[in-house]
Image 1 (cartoon, rainbow over the protein chains, first blue to last red):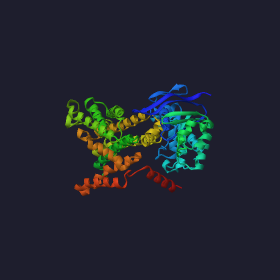
Image 2 (tube, chains in turn cyan, brown; image 1 turned 120 degrees about the vertical axis):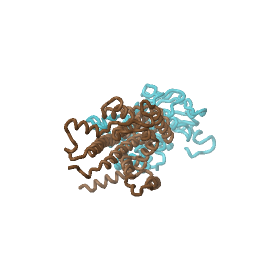
Image 3 (cartoon, rainbow over the protein chains, first blue to last red; image 1 turned 180 degrees about the vertical axis):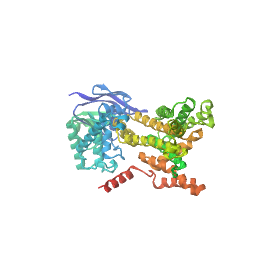
Image 4 (cartoon, rainbow over the protein chains, first blue to last red; image 1 turned 60 degrees about the vertical axis):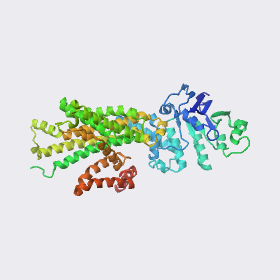
Length: 260
Length: 315
């Protein structure tokens, strides 16, 4: 196996505050890697660093053998990293279908003139975008939803799925999922994890932030544990479960906490 | 026998309406990426002066002057758009308002070129030039049953109608393409758009300069429809008026701004019977709009309902 993404001593400070420090790990092509840790441990910041929303203040991020530091977020999407957001960020006033179609932006090319003149190539491209959109809506289980409906009118669980469909439309090789099952009931959560496994079968490598420990343990090949902006452990779920540093981070030295 | 009902005054109101519709389109384009510009009167000024000066001083044919006016305004849009990208919301509005005032100040003070506060007179009027050219070819308006002033007003109106229809068709089509979707995505959530691989800077500058170009086109057409322009035509009142087209008509869809521009041009005419009170009524209408329909008269849900109703009517 070869590393698709590797982080080398990555750090991110806001003013004097180090939100992330000395983060080094790799994601192998084809695996599902879970990122876990208590609230405020820096998990979402890590996603923002990888996708260049917050460029790292230290270290290097290497994707597919090339450093991606200094690239703007849209160029990183173009390279093949796509993401979802912790608090869903759909284009709320757009239709379900259009949301996914926007995701196709970096895999299509027609500009102003070809669009307005509706050249043969542009029409072919639009057809391809629509077909791909239909396939993706089916993949995430939204084939029953009205594609012309406004995204904000969808039930919450469907919005999460739609966001995954949108990010897949960009044909990522690495997909970053930020708490895809947050706020869902048990059945919905199970469905989302089914979906994540289906996505992996398409050959997409997945980096996953999730709080539901039992699911993370089942779904992920490996885990990386964060606490206070640092990595405190890395390994297969079985080993992480027994790791005393992880237990301490989650449960505290003495008292229990609700995070676990 | 002349066609009596063809009133040159009504045609002239129609021509100004079309120019305002173009200005409405211009503000819609910039707004469609979430940028609030009050500089469109300035871009209109650039287009108008460019076209007017090229034809009066250099003797350039009118269509060439109009095209160059639009292109120059569009290029100015790129120059203003790039630094303005750091700003958003009211800050962008203030910066672009300042730009518009600078352009107007240049027009007032660069007297050797622009004629200063007096403006540019004797700009060739499209209708008259067309009539003169046709007369050389042996055509007289009487042949079509028109008086000369009817012919002039009608030809200006029809030229503007054709240009406006083309511009509207252009942007209606653009709305439904990859670029239009990118604009909408940026307006709705800039960060998510960027994460989906949309180069936000590029599209914002593109939209800004497209808006500037359409404003410039409107200005150039305006210059050749009236034969006289002065800096007074491009004050900040004009900039606000343009913005109100979109706010009143609805900024969520191109047709909203088009409707707003048309309605607000006709309203003062329709309110003539209350003479002195018409500006009060105009203001009252805007206040009521803000209270009861802040998204404007026309919004996408309304258009979808209309569309559905029409589809149901058809067998």
